[in-house]
Amino acid sequence: MFDQYMVRKDSLENVTEGGRTTGFRMGVRIADYRGCFLPLHNGYYLEVDGVFYPREQQKFAINGKAPRSFAEISKAVWEHWDFDAEGMLYVEKEGGLAPGEHVVRIQQSVLASYGYMPMQEEWVKNPPVPGGGAGSGKTHVVCEYHLMLKEEN
Amino acid sequence: MSDIRLSLTLYALSAEYTTGRFTLEDCLRKAAQMGYTGIEMVASQMVPEYPYPSRAWMDHFKELLAKYDLHPVCYSAYIDMGTHADRDLSEAEIVESTRADLEYASYMGFDIVRTQHAISPKIYRQMLPYAAKVGVPLTIEMHHPHNPTVPVWQEYLRIMKEEPEYSGVVPDFSIFAEHPHKLEKIQAVEDFGCRPEMVEEITARHTAGDSEEEMLQGDYTVPEKNYVKELFETYGDGHAHLEWLNEVLPYTRYIHGKFWYLDEDEIDRTIPCDKLLPLIKKAGYSGYMASEYEGHHFSETLNSCEQLQRWVNMSRRILASC
Image (cartoon, rainbow over all chains, first blue to last red; front, top):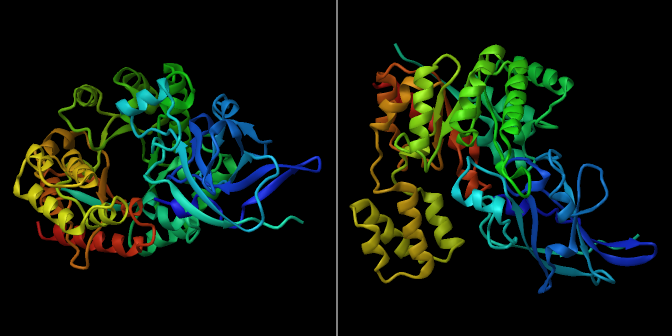
Protein backbone atom coordinates (compact mmCIF):
# COMPACT_ATOMS: atom_id res chain seq x y z
CA MET A 1 0.00 0.00 0.00
CA PHE A 2 2.06 2.93 1.21
CA ASP A 3 5.20 0.86 1.22
CA GLN A 4 7.35 3.52 -0.41
CA TYR A 5 6.47 5.96 2.37
CA MET A 6 7.14 3.72 5.37
CA VAL A 7 10.83 4.61 5.70
CA ARG A 8 11.93 8.23 5.32
CA LYS A 9 14.52 8.04 2.62
CA ASP A 10 16.97 10.56 4.06
CA SER A 11 16.80 9.23 7.61
CA LEU A 12 19.31 6.35 7.82
CA GLU A 13 22.11 7.24 10.21
CA ASN A 14 24.43 5.69 12.73
CA VAL A 15 23.75 6.01 16.45
CA THR A 16 26.57 7.04 18.75
CA GLU A 17 26.42 6.69 22.51
CA GLY A 18 29.22 7.98 24.73
CA GLY A 19 31.54 8.28 21.75
CA ARG A 20 30.88 4.73 20.61
CA THR A 21 28.83 3.81 17.55
CA THR A 22 26.34 1.23 18.75
CA GLY A 23 24.00 0.87 15.82
CA PHE A 24 21.88 2.71 13.32
CA ARG A 25 18.37 4.11 13.03
CA MET A 26 15.80 5.22 10.48
CA GLY A 27 12.54 7.16 10.53
CA VAL A 28 9.42 5.08 9.96
CA ARG A 29 5.72 5.71 9.52
CA ILE A 30 2.75 3.40 9.73
CA ALA A 31 2.50 1.58 6.41
CA ASP A 32 -1.23 1.00 6.78
CA TYR A 33 -3.96 3.66 6.77
CA ARG A 34 -4.51 4.53 10.43
CA GLY A 35 -2.82 4.98 13.78
CA CYS A 36 -2.58 2.28 16.41
CA PHE A 37 -2.14 1.60 20.07
CA LEU A 38 1.51 0.84 20.70
CA PRO A 39 1.25 -2.82 21.82
CA LEU A 40 -0.20 -3.62 18.39
CA HIS A 41 3.13 -2.63 16.90
CA ASN A 42 4.91 -5.90 16.76
CA GLY A 43 8.28 -5.01 15.27
CA TYR A 44 9.95 -5.37 11.91
CA TYR A 45 11.35 -7.92 9.59
CA LEU A 46 14.64 -6.23 8.79
CA GLU A 47 17.55 -7.05 6.56
CA VAL A 48 20.31 -4.58 5.77
CA ASP A 49 22.81 -5.55 3.08
CA GLY A 50 21.71 -9.16 3.46
CA VAL A 51 22.18 -9.24 7.25
CA PHE A 52 19.06 -10.10 9.25
CA TYR A 53 18.38 -8.08 12.41
CA PRO A 54 15.82 -9.81 14.66
CA ARG A 55 13.35 -7.95 16.81
CA GLU A 56 15.53 -8.49 19.86
CA GLN A 57 18.05 -6.11 18.29
CA GLN A 58 15.42 -3.51 17.48
CA LYS A 59 14.08 -0.64 19.56
CA PHE A 60 11.42 1.88 18.75
CA ALA A 61 11.18 5.54 19.75
CA ILE A 62 7.88 7.42 19.56
CA ASN A 63 5.93 10.12 21.40
CA GLY A 64 9.05 11.91 22.60
CA LYS A 65 10.23 8.96 24.68
CA ALA A 66 13.57 7.16 24.67
CA PRO A 67 13.89 4.07 22.47
CA ARG A 68 12.06 1.06 23.90
CA SER A 69 12.40 -2.63 23.10
CA PHE A 70 9.39 -4.31 21.54
CA ALA A 71 8.92 -6.22 24.80
CA GLU A 72 8.47 -2.82 26.48
CA ILE A 73 6.33 -1.51 23.63
CA SER A 74 3.98 -4.49 24.08
CA LYS A 75 3.20 -3.23 27.57
CA ALA A 76 2.56 0.40 26.60
CA VAL A 77 -1.18 -0.13 26.66
CA TRP A 78 -3.32 2.84 25.55
CA GLU A 79 -0.35 4.82 24.30
CA HIS A 80 -1.24 5.74 20.75
CA TRP A 81 0.99 6.02 17.69
CA ASP A 82 -0.78 8.71 15.70
CA PHE A 83 -0.93 8.01 12.01
CA ASP A 84 0.89 11.21 11.09
CA ALA A 85 3.76 10.72 13.53
CA GLU A 86 7.19 9.47 12.57
CA GLY A 87 8.82 6.92 14.86
CA MET A 88 12.48 5.95 14.93
CA LEU A 89 13.54 2.35 14.49
CA TYR A 90 16.83 1.75 16.34
CA VAL A 91 18.94 -1.27 15.49
CA GLU A 92 21.86 -2.58 17.52
CA LYS A 93 25.02 -3.10 15.48
CA GLU A 94 28.37 -2.53 17.05
CA GLY A 95 30.27 -0.02 14.91
CA GLY A 96 27.15 0.94 12.92
CA LEU A 97 26.92 0.88 9.15
CA ALA A 98 29.65 1.79 6.70
CA PRO A 99 29.36 5.06 4.79
CA GLY A 100 27.49 4.94 1.49
CA GLU A 101 24.39 3.23 0.15
CA HIS A 102 22.64 0.36 1.93
CA VAL A 103 19.96 -2.04 0.81
CA VAL A 104 17.23 -2.16 3.44
CA ARG A 105 14.55 -4.87 3.18
CA ILE A 106 11.80 -4.26 5.69
CA GLN A 107 8.27 -5.27 6.61
CA GLN A 108 6.34 -3.65 9.43
CA SER A 109 4.02 -5.60 11.69
CA VAL A 110 1.06 -3.77 13.23
CA LEU A 111 -1.57 -6.18 14.49
CA ALA A 112 -4.54 -3.87 14.09
CA SER A 113 -7.94 -5.42 13.59
CA TYR A 114 -10.58 -4.95 11.04
CA GLY A 115 -13.41 -6.46 12.96
CA TYR A 116 -12.10 -9.52 14.68
CA MET A 117 -11.41 -12.36 12.35
CA PRO A 118 -10.05 -15.79 13.36
CA MET A 119 -6.59 -14.79 12.13
CA GLN A 120 -6.56 -11.86 14.53
CA GLU A 121 -7.72 -14.03 17.42
CA GLU A 122 -4.70 -16.17 16.70
CA TRP A 123 -2.44 -13.10 16.78
CA VAL A 124 -3.53 -12.32 20.33
CA LYS A 125 -2.62 -15.83 21.46
CA ASN A 126 0.51 -16.22 19.37
CA PRO A 127 1.99 -12.96 18.11
CA PRO A 128 3.59 -13.66 14.74
CA VAL A 129 7.23 -13.05 13.93
CA PRO A 130 7.39 -10.10 11.52
CA GLY A 131 8.17 -10.90 7.92
CA GLY A 132 5.44 -13.39 7.11
CA GLY A 133 3.01 -10.64 6.16
CA ALA A 134 1.03 -10.69 9.43
CA GLY A 135 0.05 -7.16 10.31
CA SER A 136 1.66 -5.68 7.26
CA GLY A 137 -1.63 -4.02 6.32
CA LYS A 138 -1.97 -4.06 2.58
CA THR A 139 1.77 -4.20 2.04
CA HIS A 140 2.11 -7.87 1.30
CA VAL A 141 5.72 -7.85 0.29
CA VAL A 142 8.97 -7.15 2.09
CA CYS A 143 9.83 -3.66 0.84
CA GLU A 144 13.25 -2.83 -0.49
CA TYR A 145 14.84 0.58 -0.07
CA HIS A 146 18.21 1.82 -1.22
CA LEU A 147 19.25 4.37 1.38
CA MET A 148 22.32 6.54 1.73
CA LEU A 149 23.78 6.66 5.23
CA LYS A 150 23.69 10.23 6.52
CA GLU A 151 27.13 11.62 7.10
CA GLU A 152 28.07 12.17 10.71
CA ASN A 153 28.33 15.76 11.84
CA MET B 1 -39.74 8.87 -0.85
CA SER B 2 -36.04 8.16 -0.99
CA ASP B 3 -33.54 10.94 -0.35
CA ILE B 4 -30.01 9.70 -0.99
CA ARG B 5 -27.23 12.19 -0.32
CA LEU B 6 -23.59 11.64 -1.16
CA SER B 7 -20.89 11.90 1.46
CA LEU B 8 -17.18 11.37 1.23
CA THR B 9 -15.26 9.23 3.64
CA LEU B 10 -11.98 11.08 3.91
CA TYR B 11 -10.36 7.66 4.02
CA ALA B 12 -10.92 7.68 0.25
CA LEU B 13 -8.18 10.30 0.11
CA SER B 14 -5.73 8.16 2.09
CA ALA B 15 -3.12 8.27 -0.67
CA GLU B 16 -3.12 12.05 -0.82
CA TYR B 17 -3.20 12.38 2.96
CA THR B 18 -0.54 9.78 3.70
CA THR B 19 1.91 11.05 1.14
CA GLY B 20 1.47 14.63 2.33
CA ARG B 21 -0.13 15.86 -0.87
CA PHE B 22 -3.29 16.82 1.11
CA THR B 23 -3.72 18.08 4.65
CA LEU B 24 -6.97 17.46 6.51
CA GLU B 25 -8.17 20.88 5.37
CA ASP B 26 -7.25 20.04 1.77
CA CYS B 27 -9.36 16.87 2.05
CA LEU B 28 -12.34 18.87 3.31
CA ARG B 29 -11.94 21.56 0.66
CA LYS B 30 -11.77 18.95 -2.04
CA ALA B 31 -14.86 17.17 -0.69
CA ALA B 32 -16.82 20.41 -0.89
CA GLN B 33 -15.48 21.19 -4.36
CA MET B 34 -16.57 17.77 -5.61
CA GLY B 35 -20.11 18.45 -4.43
CA TYR B 36 -20.27 16.30 -1.33
CA THR B 37 -22.35 17.67 1.53
CA GLY B 38 -21.22 15.28 4.25
CA ILE B 39 -18.04 13.57 5.39
CA GLU B 40 -16.94 10.53 7.32
CA MET B 41 -13.69 10.37 9.20
CA VAL B 42 -11.62 7.37 10.24
CA ALA B 43 -10.81 8.74 13.66
CA SER B 44 -7.56 6.89 14.17
CA GLN B 45 -6.31 8.13 10.81
CA MET B 46 -6.89 11.86 11.07
CA VAL B 47 -7.68 12.78 14.68
CA PRO B 48 -4.57 13.85 16.59
CA GLU B 49 -4.24 12.27 20.01
CA TYR B 50 -6.97 9.77 19.18
CA PRO B 51 -8.80 8.31 21.10
CA TYR B 52 -8.80 11.40 23.31
CA PRO B 53 -8.66 14.45 21.04
CA SER B 54 -8.24 17.84 22.64
CA ARG B 55 -11.06 20.31 22.91
CA ALA B 56 -8.96 22.79 20.94
CA TRP B 57 -8.50 20.40 18.05
CA MET B 58 -12.18 19.46 17.97
CA ASP B 59 -13.17 23.13 17.94
CA HIS B 60 -10.74 23.73 15.08
CA PHE B 61 -12.24 20.79 13.20
CA LYS B 62 -15.75 22.15 13.70
CA GLU B 63 -14.61 25.47 12.32
CA LEU B 64 -13.21 23.72 9.24
CA LEU B 65 -16.51 21.91 8.69
CA ALA B 66 -18.37 25.21 8.92
CA LYS B 67 -15.90 26.88 6.56
CA TYR B 68 -16.55 24.29 3.86
CA ASP B 69 -20.21 23.78 4.70
CA LEU B 70 -19.80 20.07 5.34
CA HIS B 71 -21.92 17.94 7.62
CA PRO B 72 -20.13 15.44 9.92
CA VAL B 73 -21.91 12.19 9.19
CA CYS B 74 -19.86 9.33 10.55
CA TYR B 75 -17.07 8.99 13.11
CA SER B 76 -15.45 5.64 12.42
CA ALA B 77 -14.06 3.72 15.34
CA TYR B 78 -12.22 0.44 15.81
CA ILE B 79 -11.99 -2.21 18.45
CA ASP B 80 -8.44 -3.50 18.48
CA MET B 81 -8.77 -6.67 20.48
CA GLY B 82 -5.00 -7.20 20.55
CA THR B 83 -4.22 -3.97 22.38
CA HIS B 84 -2.95 -6.06 25.26
CA ALA B 85 -0.20 -8.32 24.06
CA ASP B 86 -1.48 -11.37 25.91
CA ARG B 87 -5.26 -11.18 26.03
CA ASP B 88 -8.38 -9.78 24.38
CA LEU B 89 -9.78 -6.47 25.47
CA SER B 90 -12.06 -6.85 28.46
CA GLU B 91 -15.72 -5.90 28.33
CA ALA B 92 -15.00 -2.89 30.51
CA GLU B 93 -12.31 -1.71 28.10
CA ILE B 94 -14.56 -2.07 25.07
CA VAL B 95 -17.33 -0.20 26.86
CA GLU B 96 -14.94 2.56 27.89
CA SER B 97 -13.44 3.06 24.44
CA THR B 98 -16.87 3.04 22.80
CA ARG B 99 -18.15 5.58 25.34
CA ALA B 100 -15.23 7.82 24.48
CA ASP B 101 -15.90 7.52 20.75
CA LEU B 102 -19.59 8.36 21.26
CA GLU B 103 -18.82 11.37 23.44
CA TYR B 104 -16.20 12.89 21.17
CA ALA B 105 -18.36 12.23 18.11
CA SER B 106 -21.24 13.95 19.85
CA TYR B 107 -19.13 16.99 20.68
CA MET B 108 -18.04 17.32 17.05
CA GLY B 109 -21.63 16.95 15.85
CA PHE B 110 -21.35 13.62 14.02
CA ASP B 111 -24.63 11.89 13.21
CA ILE B 112 -23.38 8.40 14.03
CA VAL B 113 -20.45 6.37 15.32
CA ARG B 114 -19.51 3.36 13.24
CA THR B 115 -17.95 0.55 15.22
CA GLN B 116 -17.15 -3.03 14.30
CA HIS B 117 -18.64 -6.43 14.94
CA ALA B 118 -15.91 -7.17 17.50
CA ILE B 119 -17.97 -5.17 19.98
CA SER B 120 -20.05 -8.38 20.55
CA PRO B 121 -23.85 -8.51 20.68
CA LYS B 122 -23.85 -8.39 24.46
CA ILE B 123 -21.82 -5.19 24.75
CA TYR B 124 -23.60 -3.66 21.76
CA ARG B 125 -26.95 -4.00 23.48
CA GLN B 126 -25.43 -2.67 26.68
CA MET B 127 -24.11 0.44 24.87
CA LEU B 128 -27.36 1.48 23.20
CA PRO B 129 -28.79 3.34 26.22
CA TYR B 130 -25.53 5.29 26.35
CA ALA B 131 -25.82 6.09 22.65
CA ALA B 132 -29.31 7.38 23.38
CA LYS B 133 -27.99 9.46 26.27
CA VAL B 134 -25.44 11.26 24.11
CA GLY B 135 -27.84 11.32 21.16
CA VAL B 136 -25.53 9.55 18.71
CA PRO B 137 -26.60 6.20 17.22
CA LEU B 138 -24.03 3.44 17.47
CA THR B 139 -23.82 1.53 14.20
CA ILE B 140 -21.88 -1.51 13.07
CA GLU B 141 -20.37 -1.94 9.64
CA MET B 142 -21.17 -5.09 7.70
CA HIS B 143 -18.11 -5.71 5.59
CA HIS B 144 -16.93 -8.64 3.52
CA PRO B 145 -16.51 -11.51 4.44
CA HIS B 146 -19.55 -10.92 6.65
CA ASN B 147 -23.11 -10.80 5.40
CA PRO B 148 -26.60 -11.13 6.89
CA THR B 149 -26.40 -14.93 6.98
CA VAL B 150 -23.43 -14.95 9.40
CA PRO B 151 -24.70 -16.01 12.87
CA VAL B 152 -23.29 -13.02 14.76
CA TRP B 153 -24.97 -10.72 12.26
CA GLN B 154 -28.30 -12.42 12.74
CA GLU B 155 -27.93 -11.53 16.40
CA TYR B 156 -27.01 -7.94 15.60
CA LEU B 157 -29.92 -7.54 13.19
CA ARG B 158 -32.27 -8.92 15.85
CA ILE B 159 -31.00 -6.35 18.36
CA MET B 160 -31.43 -3.60 15.75
CA LYS B 161 -34.99 -4.75 15.15
CA GLU B 162 -35.80 -4.81 18.86
CA GLU B 163 -34.06 -1.55 19.71
CA PRO B 164 -34.09 0.53 16.55
CA GLU B 165 -33.78 4.04 17.92
CA TYR B 166 -30.01 4.31 18.44
CA SER B 167 -28.76 1.24 16.62
CA GLY B 168 -28.14 0.53 12.96
CA VAL B 169 -26.03 -1.13 10.32
CA VAL B 170 -23.65 0.34 7.75
CA PRO B 171 -23.57 -2.08 4.82
CA ASP B 172 -20.37 -1.89 2.85
CA PHE B 173 -20.65 -2.64 -0.85
CA SER B 174 -17.76 -5.10 -0.50
CA ILE B 175 -20.40 -7.66 0.47
CA PHE B 176 -21.81 -7.39 -3.06
CA ALA B 177 -18.52 -7.54 -4.99
CA GLU B 178 -18.67 -9.88 -8.00
CA HIS B 179 -15.55 -9.58 -10.12
CA PRO B 180 -11.92 -8.51 -9.72
CA HIS B 181 -11.02 -4.97 -10.68
CA LYS B 182 -8.26 -3.76 -12.91
CA LEU B 183 -5.88 -2.87 -10.05
CA GLU B 184 -6.15 -6.33 -8.54
CA LYS B 185 -5.22 -7.91 -11.86
CA ILE B 186 -2.24 -5.59 -12.22
CA GLN B 187 -1.14 -6.48 -8.69
CA ALA B 188 -1.41 -10.21 -9.47
CA VAL B 189 1.03 -9.73 -12.34
CA GLU B 190 3.40 -7.08 -11.03
CA ASP B 191 3.59 -7.96 -7.33
CA PHE B 192 2.83 -11.66 -7.26
CA GLY B 193 4.35 -12.82 -10.52
CA CYS B 194 1.29 -14.24 -12.27
CA ARG B 195 1.41 -14.45 -16.07
CA PRO B 196 -0.87 -11.75 -17.54
CA GLU B 197 -2.61 -14.14 -19.93
CA MET B 198 -3.32 -16.54 -17.06
CA VAL B 199 -4.80 -13.76 -14.93
CA GLU B 200 -7.16 -12.99 -17.80
CA GLU B 201 -7.97 -16.67 -18.29
CA ILE B 202 -8.64 -17.27 -14.60
CA THR B 203 -10.79 -14.15 -14.39
CA ALA B 204 -12.80 -15.23 -17.45
CA ARG B 205 -13.26 -18.75 -16.08
CA HIS B 206 -14.46 -17.36 -12.75
CA THR B 207 -16.98 -15.17 -14.57
CA ALA B 208 -18.07 -18.11 -16.73
CA GLY B 209 -18.90 -20.13 -13.64
CA ASP B 210 -16.07 -22.66 -13.45
CA SER B 211 -15.64 -24.05 -9.94
CA GLU B 212 -12.68 -23.28 -7.69
CA GLU B 213 -11.84 -26.98 -7.56
CA GLU B 214 -11.72 -27.27 -11.34
CA MET B 215 -9.58 -24.19 -11.65
CA LEU B 216 -7.10 -25.28 -8.99
CA GLN B 217 -6.48 -28.39 -11.06
CA GLY B 218 -5.48 -26.20 -14.01
CA ASP B 219 -1.93 -25.78 -15.20
CA TYR B 220 -1.22 -22.71 -13.10
CA THR B 221 1.73 -21.57 -11.00
CA VAL B 222 1.47 -21.17 -7.22
CA PRO B 223 0.81 -17.39 -7.42
CA GLU B 224 -1.84 -18.04 -10.08
CA LYS B 225 -3.53 -20.63 -7.87
CA ASN B 226 -3.44 -18.08 -5.06
CA TYR B 227 -5.16 -15.68 -7.42
CA VAL B 228 -7.85 -18.33 -8.03
CA LYS B 229 -8.36 -18.69 -4.27
CA GLU B 230 -8.47 -14.93 -3.84
CA LEU B 231 -11.20 -14.60 -6.44
CA PHE B 232 -13.43 -17.17 -4.78
CA GLU B 233 -12.74 -15.77 -1.32
CA THR B 234 -13.54 -12.19 -2.31
CA TYR B 235 -16.16 -12.62 -5.04
CA GLY B 236 -17.74 -15.99 -4.29
CA ASP B 237 -19.29 -17.41 -7.42
CA GLY B 238 -19.38 -13.99 -9.09
CA HIS B 239 -23.04 -13.28 -8.37
CA ALA B 240 -24.00 -10.72 -5.75
CA HIS B 241 -26.68 -11.68 -3.28
CA LEU B 242 -28.87 -8.66 -3.93
CA GLU B 243 -31.51 -10.13 -1.64
CA TRP B 244 -29.24 -9.31 1.32
CA LEU B 245 -30.27 -5.70 0.84
CA ASN B 246 -33.78 -6.54 2.03
CA GLU B 247 -32.34 -7.84 5.27
CA VAL B 248 -30.15 -4.83 6.04
CA LEU B 249 -32.00 -1.83 4.60
CA PRO B 250 -34.62 -1.64 7.39
CA TYR B 251 -31.77 -0.96 9.84
CA THR B 252 -29.42 0.96 7.57
CA ARG B 253 -28.33 4.38 8.78
CA TYR B 254 -25.49 4.93 6.35
CA ILE B 255 -23.97 3.16 3.38
CA HIS B 256 -20.37 2.58 2.37
CA GLY B 257 -20.25 2.84 -1.40
CA LYS B 258 -17.01 0.91 -1.66
CA PHE B 259 -15.18 0.83 -4.98
CA TRP B 260 -11.66 0.23 -6.25
CA TYR B 261 -11.44 1.38 -9.81
CA LEU B 262 -13.65 2.91 -12.47
CA ASP B 263 -12.58 3.42 -16.06
CA GLU B 264 -13.38 6.51 -18.09
CA ASP B 265 -16.77 5.03 -18.98
CA GLU B 266 -17.77 5.42 -15.30
CA ILE B 267 -19.11 1.90 -14.89
CA ASP B 268 -18.27 -0.24 -11.86
CA ARG B 269 -17.53 -3.72 -13.13
CA THR B 270 -16.73 -5.10 -9.68
CA ILE B 271 -19.79 -4.06 -7.70
CA PRO B 272 -23.17 -4.09 -9.48
CA CYS B 273 -24.15 -0.52 -8.60
CA ASP B 274 -26.51 -0.45 -11.57
CA LYS B 275 -28.61 -3.01 -9.70
CA LEU B 276 -27.92 -1.98 -6.09
CA LEU B 277 -28.70 1.72 -6.28
CA PRO B 278 -32.17 1.32 -7.85
CA LEU B 279 -33.05 -1.26 -5.19
CA ILE B 280 -31.84 1.06 -2.42
CA LYS B 281 -33.82 3.96 -3.85
CA LYS B 282 -36.93 1.85 -4.40
CA ALA B 283 -36.77 0.67 -0.78
CA GLY B 284 -37.04 4.32 0.26
CA TYR B 285 -33.63 4.67 1.91
CA SER B 286 -33.03 8.22 3.03
CA GLY B 287 -29.63 9.27 4.25
CA TYR B 288 -26.04 9.52 3.23
CA MET B 289 -24.19 7.10 1.00
CA ALA B 290 -20.42 7.47 1.14
CA SER B 291 -18.01 7.21 -1.74
CA GLU B 292 -15.43 4.85 -0.35
CA TYR B 293 -12.64 4.68 -2.88
CA GLU B 294 -10.12 2.03 -1.88
CA GLY B 295 -7.90 1.80 -4.94
CA HIS B 296 -5.09 3.23 -2.84
CA HIS B 297 -4.64 -0.23 -1.34
CA PHE B 298 -3.30 -1.22 -4.73
CA SER B 299 -1.72 1.95 -6.06
CA GLU B 300 -1.06 5.21 -4.28
CA THR B 301 -0.28 7.02 -7.51
CA LEU B 302 -3.76 7.00 -9.05
CA ASN B 303 -5.69 10.23 -8.87
CA SER B 304 -8.25 9.54 -6.14
CA CYS B 305 -10.26 12.65 -6.95
CA GLU B 306 -10.66 11.55 -10.55
CA GLN B 307 -11.86 8.14 -9.36
CA LEU B 308 -14.26 9.75 -6.90
CA GLN B 309 -15.65 12.07 -9.56
CA ARG B 310 -16.31 9.08 -11.81
CA TRP B 311 -18.12 7.29 -9.00
CA VAL B 312 -20.21 10.35 -8.19
CA ASN B 313 -21.14 10.76 -11.86
CA MET B 314 -22.06 7.09 -12.07
CA SER B 315 -24.17 7.20 -8.92
CA ARG B 316 -26.01 10.36 -9.97
CA ARG B 317 -26.65 8.90 -13.41
CA ILE B 318 -28.07 5.66 -11.99
CA LEU B 319 -30.15 7.39 -9.32
CA ALA B 320 -31.58 9.87 -11.81
CA SER B 321 -32.69 7.13 -14.15
CA CYS B 322 -34.58 4.97 -11.71
